[in-house]
Length: 180
Image (cartoon, rainbow, N blue to C red; front, side, top):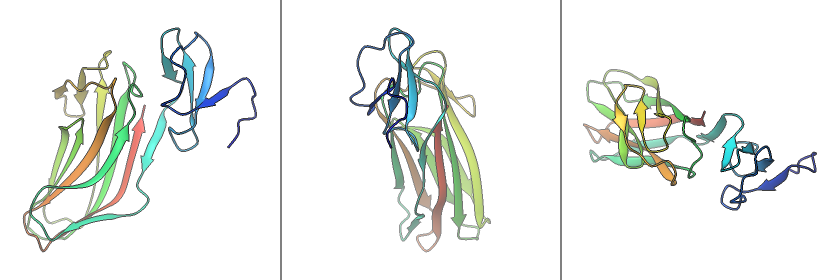
């Protein structure tokens, strides 16, 4: 969708100008649901608002295996989180309601930032986040665990599932990823 303001140029995240003049505003058309406004700070482009980067459109089911299995992969563009940014993840699951363990992991850059194990539940929702600590290479998660993930490069957010019994099922019914 074309912008009504002719002074704001449109780019994709990959082809945005490398120079970010202080105060200049651009629209990044391929980040977020309707694009995202970024402002130059003289060095780089900084998001002007939080971005709903991903919403699950179709449920994803896991059954028939006891191996840890990737259920969803979402790419987080390089430097989108900024020095004080946060990736906030909401996950809603439907599960076989029995005593067998079902384990869900949320990983960023190959590192596990959240693990949730469930038994005797048919529905489970949880939130987790990863916060840059005034550095694009130092973070803490919602459990106050430290990480050293380089967010100046693109990283995948990966959600995996593992069943104790291959006859059980766990289904991702909703996933939301926001960059704040």
